[in-house]
Image (cartoon, rainbow over all chains, first blue to last red; front, side, top):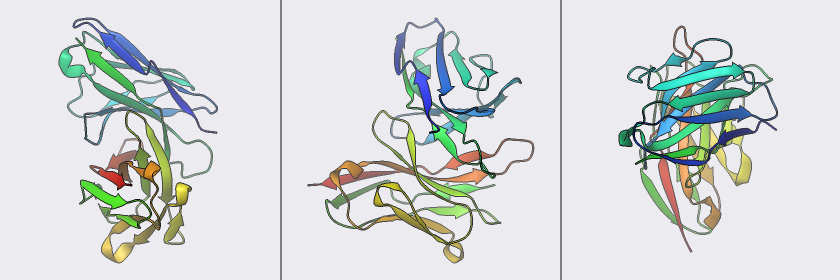
Length: 118
Length: 116
């Protein structure tokens, strides 16, 4: 149980276009999801916290107009990279807070999406 | 603020040898600690976690970790490493920030190479 999927796994887009990444909790409801960015050989950097039915909370330094997050349902959060540029190329990982037993601080991670902007 | 330090950027061990990956945390109260593993191009998989109770925690794939409050450490161990254990390992602690969700703060990671 507690599986998180991401789609697509890889995407290549041209500079100036937008790309949407989906994060789904497959067998549980996730009121809170998280979006991370990971540079090569680096740790995970939290970009934003996504709460179902409300606006996402962005970390300091993350452009909310560039990285649009929508948590439309209890099983789906999307990250849209708008007007992508080569410097947005990265590995994006989502996670969902584990359901059930309190305290549910554990997160389940998706497999990641490799974004390349040409 | 909570923080996590993984002092070893890269560790190389021979297959069958024992392994210990170090993790030190900074937090005033009892922390909630995790170890995750990441294979190349993949997401993170939870190996084990510590919330309270027994300070020696057993995880998946034969891994264990010991919480030592006096040393502010949560080191990951495995008695006999397999080639498939080669991956990046992340230690993480729950960050309690006022007005925010309970986020994970990750260490910088330790890359494990296993020699045949």
